[in-house]
Image (cartoon, rainbow, N blue to C red; front, side):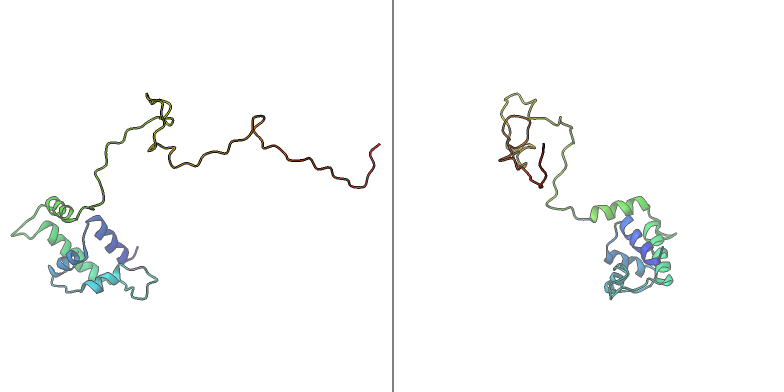
Length: 154
């Protein structure tokens, strides 16, 4: 596991944005720009990818300790800091609150009281099945072909 992987996993686990990471690094007097930081999070085959050095990761971890726990003079509760990060993340406007999931039988149309199929039901988007003539369920052969291979049957 590389330093870049560790930095990526910490960013995701702690729900940190790039500007928050820059602030954390400034707590230990380590200056880095957002674009330099973005180079650490790129794919390895990207032309602007940069290896995260030990010094950057060490300073980030030291700054993270100060950020979460605070200093001796001014201690913090890490759970409150993480809750604050979670509250700062904007909610998606398009996402709706999920209703409680309730299971329904597969053939919910069969159990309806009004016996009329709903248009919004599970069968609304399905194509209709082809109907075959009655019989064994196979389509009728138009004509039978007789092959003559030159041999006389007697």
